[in-house]
Length: 219
View 1 (cartoon, rainbow, N blue to C red):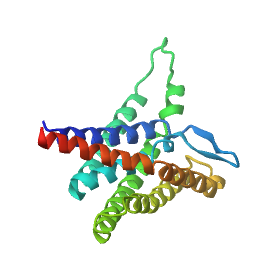
View 2: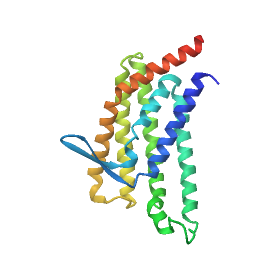
View 3: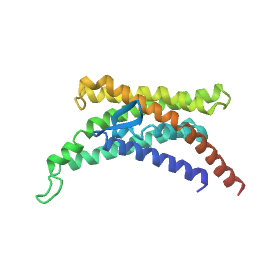
View 4: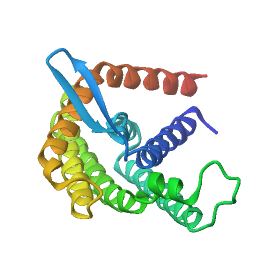
């Protein structure tokens, strides 16, 4: 297996892991005082979620739209698989000596189905938009302005994703309706802030991957 193939496999795996873990922990909401004048209140599942767009942007940059879309579909498939496993386990009866009884397990994972459906729909739509916009910006800028195609595509896609998933959860009463606007604003603001701060990481990742692939071709 070439270095390029290993990198592609690793990026797809990392993408799937972030998506699945995010759905498992989304019911906990956290406060992140990242700025002295503002504290972000958002789902724990959203803390690392912006990295998924960085990953798909990297895949699009080096492997193209087709392989990026395959990774998105793979992430969806892993999400669906985990969703059905949790649904199955939730319907099994706990033993009398189990430290986690039926009620506790259901309270933690019982709403995973709602979160799973909303997340899958939002993830798929937003990632497809991100890949399309990234590829378009890459083409019209003649592969210049790396920061523009990364941040521009992600900013639009994150707004679509955040609005869809929060609205979906509110509609199915997994989240309080009176927090709809606040949750969308806080979640999107954090994700955009995270994305802008991770711009150097994206540049570093692109530079590193180019060096690894070049070394593999000349080695």
